[in-house]
Length: 314
Image 1 (cartoon, rainbow, N blue to C red):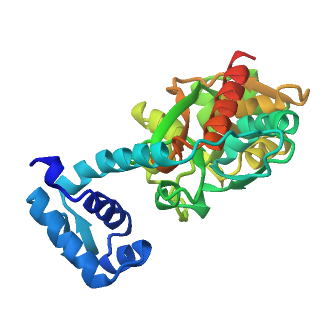
Image 2: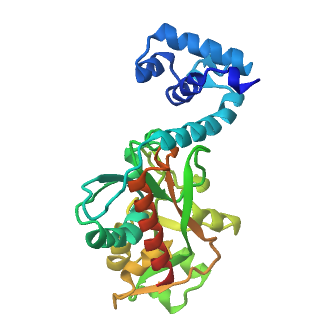
């Protein structure tokens, strides 16, 4: 296919159709009629020799060819959009912009606390709207409704940009009066009672089934490899709650080391290495290609990465 003979508006149609997965919604997004969008989809099918979207019991579903094309088209349009925008300077000292950041409780208590301190010095009028993972979807981030997501992701859409902020190990937080400290072996660890902390993802969560080991996350998956299982008394989605329970109850909280450091100066608490191996986890920052070239967004990404690097060295 000779691209010089192609109507490049079709790429815009394709981009919106892949986001909305609906001819009606895509037409509304582009302020055109539904027949015009239907005709655009017909022309896309002819150009690529592929159905692009197929109607199934779950609605309009993209083909494999369409999924392969989506990140390529999104990146090309993003670069073009950035190129034709008038150049504007971003001044953090005077900006009153609000950035919406989806952050896990772990990221919020370890990283964003320091980011807010930096903002107070560098950008006193900028606001952060911190949203929990259960409040948003990948769709919201992809559309730029959320500026970025900071969490531990196993998978991300190919269209997203991402950056590893740091790698973290695991630690056990225990009250110094807990008898398990007399001999902190794997057997004694497993005899004790534990607090489980969620590896929070996107979307509204559901209750935890202690028998579904794979869904319990890193700690329990590694124990399962050893043919062992811990006794979980409390399931929580908040690291501060887990730490407080470990302090007030005879419970062990096994969580990322940077979260454990919150209690490193508490004389009533002990922080120890787990009595078995747990692979490190990666904290990542992810954002939409739509915001890749935004001057304010570039500045905030740089600030977050510099803050993460400073914390990693501390």
